[in-house]
Length: 112
Length: 222
Image (cartoon, rainbow over all chains, first blue to last red; front, side, top):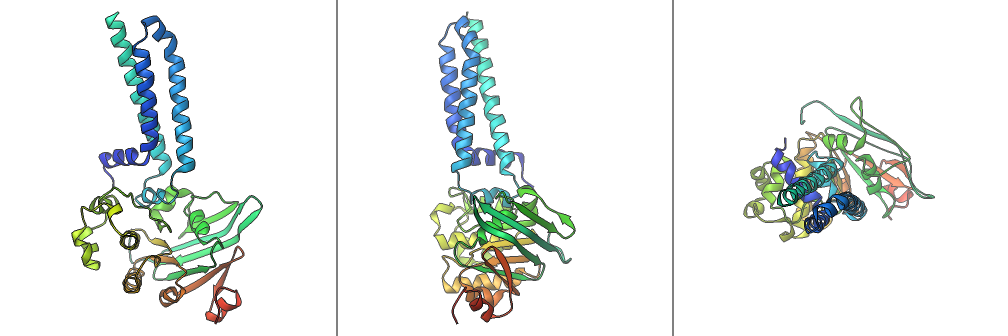
């Protein structure tokens, strides 16, 4: 039976290319929003989030098409579904994005 | 999951097509504890496709898989019953061997008893091993897992004749605990260990009784 830490490591290992691309998308979106005025930030938060989701969707799609099919058997053989790993990575990535977005907005409001 | 009870695995009515090209036309495969099933076939005849279909990784036009009396669907469930060694390496290149064994719940010490030279490699990442050494690790992990079945796709590739003999010995030992399906183009080595031989030809599976059948189906010459 795998521990939670092992499962988390597997998510990061399997989905690393997607998480790197999407993470860069997150950082770019948050950086752009953080330099805007509070009013502009409110207006641009939704389009930025949509853009971020599109980046995540495209990178995930490319990953599923281009990743090694044989590498999958490492995860299948240890009893982990690659679909589950993908779902967990997407949740993790979006969670990180919303936490950062919320923090940025709270800080910007506090500074205003 | 290893036990003294006899388990059976049956994959039947496997139909697979890529566009208009039919790869498998109702192929079948069976295995049971205590038996080694050899699968032969020319290059590109669909052996690996058949294994991938069984593992739930290829979308087939028809497939029926049964473990004992339970119908199995999808790769999640299959992973519990069958360990599959693909043709190309499936081990993460940067991961040290000992960590891989931890993920598989396998004992590295037991592995080094079978292959003593690996005693110095526990912290070595996979990418620093030779192709043959990686193959040995993969074969051992699949064969010595607690799954009731194991599919080895070309296990003798990249291996020196001495290593082939060691793997044959390991297969003979492990078949007491599990059902083993082996496919390889080194058919002499495969015939030495197989209790039942199947030949995949034109999308159909034929049961082979002797070498003359292999000649008859155009797999080899006398």
